[in-house]
Length: 254
Ligand SMILES: Nc1ncnc2c1ncn2[C@@H]1O[C@H](COP(=O)(O)OP(=O)(O)O)[C@@H](O)[C@H]1O
Ligand SMILES: [Mg+2]
Image: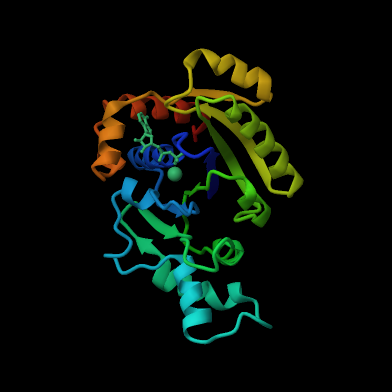
């Protein structure tokens, strides 16, 4: 089981990358997968063709809120993550043919995602199903790193946007991840769809990290996202999908 975390600034193309990576892994028969949407924006379900609500599934934040607030439970004196664990697998996990899905969600005490993050971390630690890959779509900011949704991951992908702030984002992310003690095998830099091609070399030299290439700017992706269609169903000829395939072929081989 390998865990991949995708990060980057808002709008860089994280979620669409995770969705296209899901399509690639399904096509490569590297299933089952677990998709985890850790971004309060919660776009991953739609981009992978799932309607969490109509599936009757709840976000981790909703389950926490229900268990500890609506039912008058207390968060004092008991590790909430331990109590919530089973509930997450029973009522939070969407189970599909090729991939399962968990959403962290937003409904909790405003401004504090610590509890859902802690609950997710605990739950991920108890996975018994033999997923081949866990794909985590993480929020744009870097604050969440302090809360360590996962403390040990295999690969981190930082998707770069078109601004010079993206260079700083990569460097800061790389530093903070090591500072908070998240262990990882590889930290890769990827050019997002709006990242200027010619800056690829600079991305590698300036960050000191391996640059895997750029995700193609693809009107078809924009159209699919706009109309709420699943990127898993995008044609194989999609330029963005082909570039993601090329990127992943370089690093996923066995
Ligand atoms: N490969 C692409 N080509 C063209 N537009 C894209 C591509 N990927 C994403 N987009 C557009 O950019 C927007 C942001 O992408 P998204 O993946 O949601 O970024 P993030 O998750 O980093 O905020 C999407 O709504 C979509 O319209
Ligand atoms: Mg996103």
